[in-house]
Image (cartoon, rainbow, N blue to C red; front, side, top):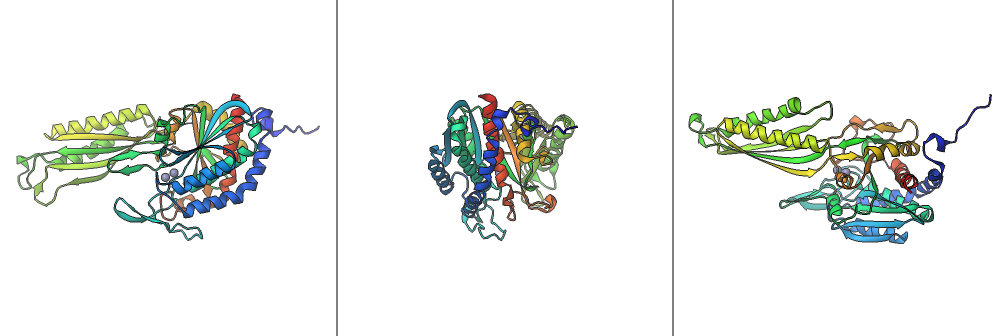
Length: 430
Ligand SMILES: [Zn+2]
Ligand SMILES: [Zn+2]
């Protein structure tokens, strides 16, 4: 009996017309690897903090212009938007890369190690691409080159979003994020779908991870001030002790996760990270201040957790004769991968990474401002392996640390999957 060999395009579940560009993408991405690595090393050596990415933005804008892509600069302070109009009509697909570095002093001994320093919140510090955003910029510059070279075949428009300040700006009471501001400036209005990736220092090169629905947590800052009545430490009955009250509140808050949140649907976190109150052994202070972080995986859960924090803190305080002021500042919403888009792109991810290389990500309690784009239009955010093959993730330095290190072997896969997203989506939606 003759062995039946099905062409790969049929197995992948995507019609032939959309996949015909894949071999060309593969070949062009591979040919660009050395250039992407060079760009990445240059950006790594010249890291810039949020909303100060002027050198990086210029490098990006010059490259896009060189490719014949329409460029908008100074979007959301230092962001760059590139518009590549394909030869045929179709949807607008946005691809995002964040450009900012962190106030971390690099300890990795690399020929292109960062020696940049700055003053941050009054402290001298190094500046380092300790979250790998340098790799995101270089990969997306490569994708722009791949797609620009096949412009006539593209059935729609590609919008490149090089965003500033993903890690956020926290200065003099101002908090802002690049993605939020880009959305406010209207970048998502004409977009049909948005894709982004994050390199992972603890995921092997060659792998891609993702999950449908909530993927990364939403994050909010918590501040509670407990007002009591000051008294001598030897006669507590003459005052209202905000320290004892605060201790009860901290314990009470932990029951939100164990008693109120449906943990079979999604976990949540309430962490009190600092408590300040008192000055001496024998003085019961007037007030105690606590700060903390809240992580949730959706608007409904977030509303519940906020409500319970307020109820628990104010009612425990009231029962003690004290008063609690609760202040919750919403930072990023949860990163939620649109289930329909995610399902549609499953075969695309598999085709790019290959059998055995696609991972279902666990829920991640870290946060990403890519969520602001996803609140406007369906979006998919994936993880790309950046740990050397055979590495032990438990022994590999995590993001935001001085020893953070990325193996450059995964960049071609990053370019391929982002380019596949564009041509496959355009093929499906034309
Ligand atoms: Zn980060
Ligand atoms: Zn990051």
